[in-house]
Image (cartoon, rainbow, N blue to C red; front, side):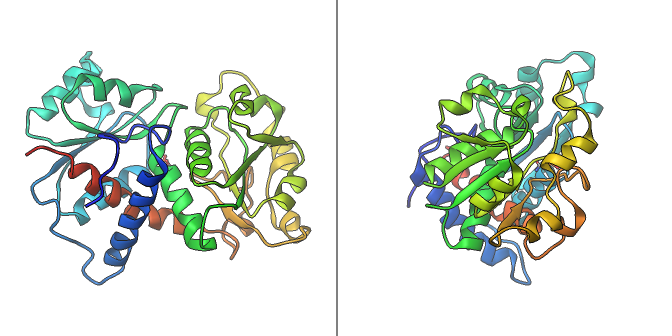
Length: 309
Ligand code: CP
């Protein structure tokens, strides 16, 4: 049986192309299962997983929990707001105490970039990064590329534009790595203040004109403006951002071609994306959410093969 080349899922940067292809092939099987009347398999009955969320989440947290339950693993959920972290306990102490209760795998979202990698070096457990600050969100990038593959047949050679707040986005960085490993063409679009300088070294080109960007691409992945990570104003107002970079039906209707619309959620309706596009036939936003469960089942299943019991 094929195995992942990594012991943890910390970021897409650490994965090889063949790891991503293995995750997709495994997710294909799980997607078939979760679309049957009985959506559960007994595969991981001997595994216990802790979900540690130090930051808010709807999609990722519920998707991981459903993935774990559909694999029949035992699940415990931890939220930092109601924990002893509030009394000053360190991250490593917190996790080591959870692991002492015979937990095998940790899924963690944390506001600090590098938190998942730090944990993987300091505790004895498999670690899955569910988003670390503005660094990486590997399962989001995997489900995004998987959804493109499902919609367009493959990712290779497809033109993807990522629009919006690239500077503060872990989704963007993980998507660049994933799409490039899968041989897609990636560009970005947004105000120069929200485009990080490191993109030049990754060979990612920048559009400032939204219509030009949409006419170039096969797929537009539209990001939320992440106010919680912004210390200064990067553009004059939401109204102006929406007028210059917002994607709406009038703009889509003016294009020379049909394109696929994606968004990792949560959407700021009326800012980066209008409701008549978010809810249109162009949008695969809810397919992304559905595919998130199969992708997370695949990642958990493949990492569980590496646990020495
Ligand atoms: N896409 C995503 O990470 O959403 P949540 O913050 O709701 O988990």
